[in-house]
Length: 98
Image (cartoon, rainbow, N blue to C red; front, side, top):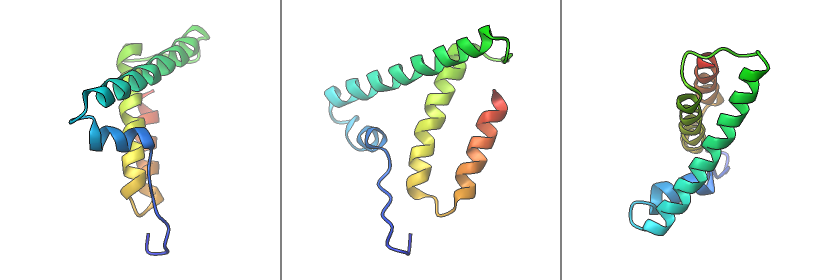
């Protein structure tokens, strides 16, 4: 970050961290966004499972929620980490769960 590059992060993640606790309208919208992402992950995993390409040790709902959380965490880490390896480590572990 010393090269003048500003890391702004994800608008939704920033809004959730800064405003959701004090504004119920924002909290509702952030929750709706997260539920939408969860549903998208769920359908992706369901399709992968139907095609026989993946066998899971967790329910699709659990995995979907985990992926939403990991995605959100990566946005936060991406805003603060000074090295790309930190992000790659998180992604490596997340993919190993699948």
